[in-house]
Structures are given as structure tokens and as C-alpha cells.
Amino acid sequence: MDETTHTPDNTHDEAPQAEVATTPDLGLQQELQAAHAKAAENLEGWQRAQAEFANYKKRMARDQEGQEAEIRGRVIKRYLEIVDDLELALKNKPAEAEWVQGIELIYRKLLSFLEAEDVQRVDPLGQPFDANLHEAIAQEDSQDYESGTVSEVLRTGYTLGERVLRPAVVKVAK
Image 1 (cartoon, helix red, strand yellow):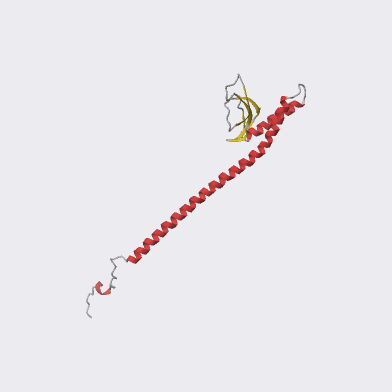
Image 2 (cartoon, helix red, strand yellow):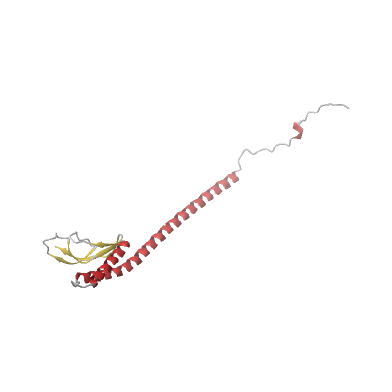
């Protein structure tokens, strides 16, 4: 037996390597560019839809707040008529009637309720006339007030937050 050492010959056992194309396939490159453009277009459309939906939600919330404020204002306006009646009753109250204290208590409670609802009285006496807050029904000569200022308040005005619930009915000095 002959002992010969065999060294492995790697050159015979290796499979031939495939040649890698060094020139890019123009058709594949164009498809890739088209796919990238389509993906960018889809992303842009999705982002636009997201922004439109966010704006829609904000608009709906704003509209709902407006509707709630409108309903709240209509309800509170009805209470203002009661306030007017109570003020008139208290202005013309009898001197010694016991029921007057009860009426005053109800009046103060109603005013507290309105204040808790962010209803504020418009007290324009001596202030310049503002058509947004006041309704002038007459002009009168006045030595106590400058021309264009409110000289008498005939009916109190009220605001709910920034919104005028009812303008003050006034006389204006000329």
C-alpha cells in the first residue's frame, strides 16, 4: 500500500461562480423609480387625509361648542326676565312687608346662579355709548354726562362670556 498524501484540490470542487451583471437593468430601475413615486404619492395623500380629518374634528368641536353656547344663552335669557321682575318688585317694595326679605333672598340666589354660569351684568352708566353692548332708545340733554355717554340705564344688559345675551337699554346724553 502506498501511502501518499493527498492534498485537497479546491479548484476542482468549487462550482463556477455566476457572473454578476455590472450593468443595471434599465427596466427594473424604472419600475423601482415608479414604485418610489407611487409610495411618495400615497404617503402625501394619506398625510393630507389625516390633516383634513384633524381639521374636521376641530370644526365639529367648534360647531358643537357654538350650539351649546346658543342653547345655554336662550335658557339664561329666560331667567333674565325673572331678574327684571324681581328688581322691579324690590324697587317698589312696601316699607314693612315681611315677604320682601324672601324676595331679596330669591333675587340674590338667582344672581349667584347667573354669575356661576359666567353671566355678567352690563353696567354702562357714565360710559361711552357702544352699539355692540347698548341699545339707545332716546337722547337727552344732560349736565351730568358728556355727549355720547350713557346717562340712564332703563334695562340692564347681560353678557355670557364674550357674547351679548341682551343689550342694555339706555338713554344717551347729547
